[in-house]
Length: 368
Ligand SMILES: CC(C)(COP(=O)(O)OP(=O)(O)OC[C@H]1O[C@@H](n2cnc3c(N)ncnc32)[C@H](O)[C@@H]1OP(=O)(O)O)[C@@H](O)C(=O)NCCC(=O)NCCS
View 1 (cartoon, rainbow, N blue to C red):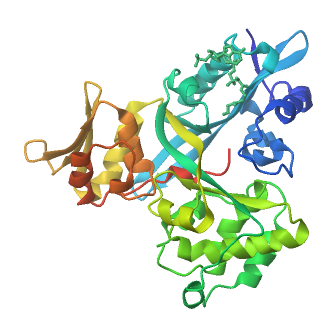
View 2 (cartoon, rainbow, N blue to C red; view 1 turned 90 degrees about the vertical axis):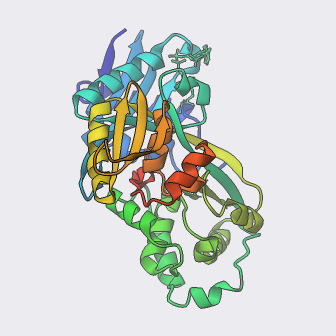
View 3 (cartoon, rainbow, N blue to C red; view 1 turned 45 degrees about the vertical axis):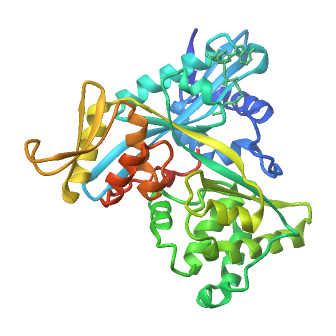
C-alpha cells in the first residue's frame, strides 16, 4: 500500500478534496453553509500539503488523512503536538486497514518531527481506543433555535461595557476559515468568567462560530457572560434566514452544564477528544518544567504516572498516581478545575483541588 502526500503529488488535490466533500461527516446537525474542506483550512492549506496523505487504487483516491503540528506553550517551555483530522476512507473501501495505515504513517512522521502527542476530535470511541488513543475529554452539543433564544434580563448590568453592535459587525464580516491563532484562544479561555464580555471576547466567540456553520466551539465561562451575545447572534441570523440555528459546543466537564441546559435546552454528547502519546519523555520534561514553580513534580515509573508534591523524592507526597496517562493529560490539558474532571477518583480530586495546577489548554488549537 503506497501512501502519498499532496506536496509530492499536488495535481491530486482536487480529487482528495472531492472525496472529503462527498463523504466526510458534516458534523452535528448543523446546516451546511460552506464546503466541508473550508472548515478545515489549517489542515488543507497549501503550506500543510506534505501532511495531507492519501491512498490511491486504480487511479481513484480511496482514503485520506491530514495532520498539523502546533506548539503549546507554557511560561516554562513549549510542547509540540500534532492534530489529526479529516480521517476518511471511501465507503466502498472501508474495513481493509487503509485508515489504520494512514494513522500509523502520520504518527511516525509526527514523532520524527518532534511531536509528543497526537490528538483529535471524533465520535468514534471504539475506533480510536483500539488504536492506542486515550479518551481525554468530550464536548456537549446544544442546538438553539433562532426563535427561542432567551437573554436573561439580569445581564444588563454585567454587560454594560459590552459593545454588541461591534461584535455583530465583526460576526457579519467573517467569511471562511478559522480566524484565531493559538494565543488568542488561550487568551480567550483564560479570561475569568466573572468579567463582562468586552468586544474582543465577543470577537473571539463569534469568530469561529461563523467559520464553522454557526457552531460556537469550546465555549467556556459563566452563561450569564455570553448568553446575551448568543441571543444577539441568533437574532442577527434570524433576520437573514429564520431556519438557521446556532450550535454551542462546551467541554463535557463544563462547570455550568446544568445552567446551560436550563437556559437553552437539552444537550447532546458532541465529539469526544482523544490523544495518543508519541513521546513520553518529552511530555514528562515539559510537564516537569511547567510544574516546578508550583512545587509539583511529575514522575513516570513502570507505566505509572505520578504527580508529586514536594521538592525531593524523600521529602514528598504522592498526590495522584495512575496507570492511565489519560487522567494525567486531562488534568493538564483541561480548562476546568480539577474537581470537575471526568473519571478521576474522588480522593484524587480532593487531594488535587487544594493545589493550583497550571492548565495547558489543548482546547486552544485552531480548528482541525
Ligand atoms: C473511520 C474510518 C476512517 C475507518 O476507515 P477504514 O479504512 O475502514 O479503517 P480500517 O480498515 O483501518 O479500520 C476498520 C475499522 O472499521 C471497522 N469496519 C470493518 N468493516 C467496515 C466497513 N465495511 N465499514 C466501516 N467500518 C468497518 C473495523 O471493525 C475497524 O474498526 P475496529 O478496528 O475499531 O473494530 C471510516 O469508517 C470513515 O471514513 N468513516 C467516516 C469518516 C469519519 O467518521 N472519520 C472520523 C472522523 S475524525
